[in-house]
Length: 70
Image (cartoon, rainbow, N blue to C red; front, side):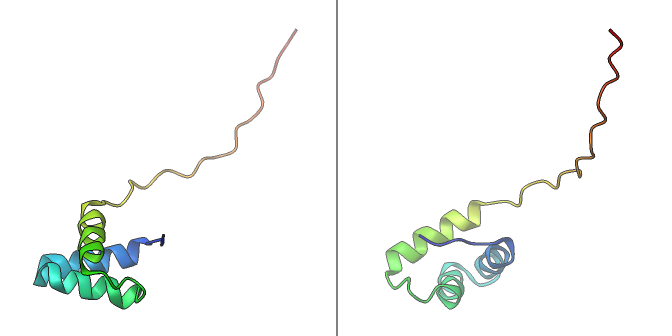
C-alpha cells in the first residue's frame, strides 16, 4: 500500500499524456522505487490516470448559535 498526493498524481498523468504508458510507469517508479512488478506498476498508473482532483470546497465558517426565546 502507498499513498499518492496530487503533485505526484499530476506528474504521473503528465508523463502518460505526453510520452505514454512506459514513461508514466517510469515516473511512478521514480516516486515509489519498491514497485518492481511491471504489471502492477502499469495497473497503478492506469488507476492514478483515472483520478481527477477533488473540487475545491469553500471554507466553512463558524455557525452562530440560534437565539431561542422560550
